[in-house]
Image 1: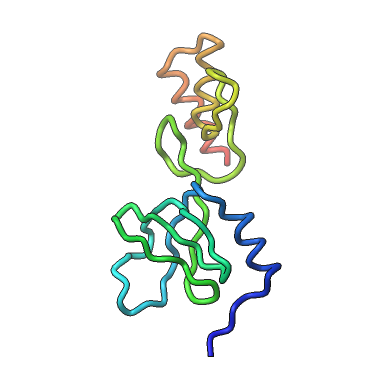
Image 2: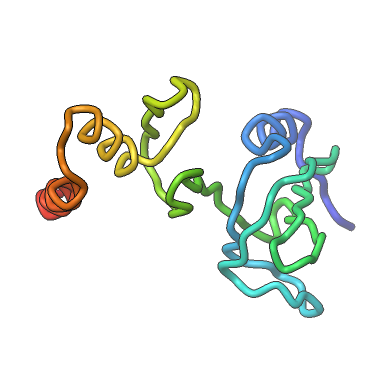
Length: 130
């Protein structure tokens, strides 16, 4: 008999994975699944059993079953399209779009009049220091 998670757990999953959240598949315990690990998608909804339904970028619509499968939230920069972790930067262009730290640094350097080639050197130096 399949056991469903408690309401508190389902509520937390719904809070952590709202519609529109980007995710990456870590594992799926389904012998019939054709979704490779690392596939990315967008959360459609979370049902009352804690299953996260995803519109996968490969066209599939299979859900992530609580306790069986796993995924992780990812953040994709709307400017450079790279995946990043950590805290986002606020775009200086509209003061509302969240962007990756590198694009935030580029925007700040650009506003200070730093040429593009120097911007990349500065960002490379930042990464080397990390």
